[in-house]
Length: 429
Image (tube, rainbow, N blue to C red; front, side, top):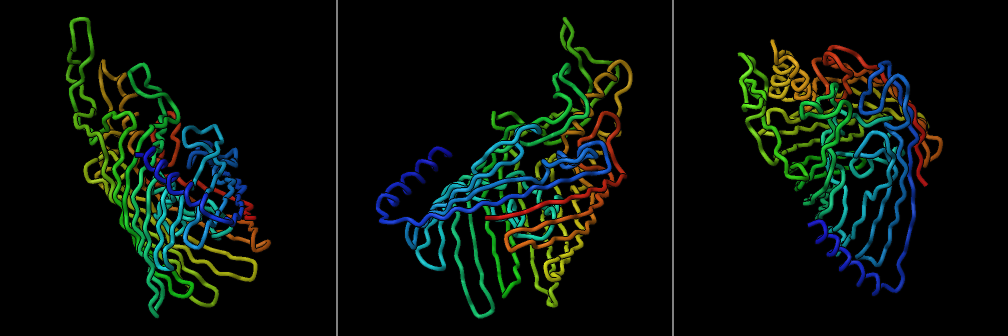
């Protein structure tokens, strides 16, 4: 399907380009150089620790827009950012590569590699100049493992007297890497290595988003349906239950006393995701703005999957070139996920099979469970219309668990605060 879409796009683009007498080409670029440091030695959100890092927020990009005629355009965007396949490399990537067709002012068709219209800032999530928060809240903006897809979108716009409505529907596919961090090494038992492990997966998604804009206020609601599966077709664990422990011997499998371990008798080859998203950016007057987004990711068939809800509320006020803000965000897994996490996390295998506890730790670490919230205060300064400096202090309160922490060997981290200071320089050209 991916090859078919690329071939179809090229088949559309080449005749149009050949027929165009004069195409208008515009180039632009964007970037963020961001530094973040916490008061904890372990990593938070992949890269943030007490040594400081440039990896969490730094990104560079360039975009080319080719206007073939009044109806057809081509958009290409590439960026340089930390790899999604490992925690060490920086890699270039093609974010956008699509053909746009606008037969009239109220219809827009796009084909190619597109941005999924998930959040208020989906289109500009990498362009720090376009928003004032030093970091868009992870409790909301990490809701989906993918931002871009290879597919098609159709948009229809209405402009009654009360404002502008836009309905966008899309379908697409995207490969991605699901990151899980293991505090122990279980390779001798057929498990994963200690540290970050990246599972190659594929996702097919479709959705519909309604956006209403009145003056400078925006309201958005969307519903998205996605199916994810392992790239190699491997089964996924729906849930874990206590099973008797059997170990291989020359004579075959042997029951180990009365020992039990959590195991995976229930397997599936795909995960259904249903995501509901609401958002608003409201002009309150007197230079105040209220931003709020909420997302619910429902995964009905799995107890160990990241079924969760998250969101944030932020209040900003523009004061000349300064824009101070305060925000609070929350991320909470469904009760069934937290319950399974706690059950396995508190369980210990006793007796001669206790060496298998490392595999139980890996089951816990593979469950993406969250119970956290974040308070943040920050400030952005407009150097020029194309440059901003931002700073933020955030206190991340981890309650029972958080998969955003790279847990070191030992007990799972809970009931703790992580203080993060961030500063960044953002620009476009």
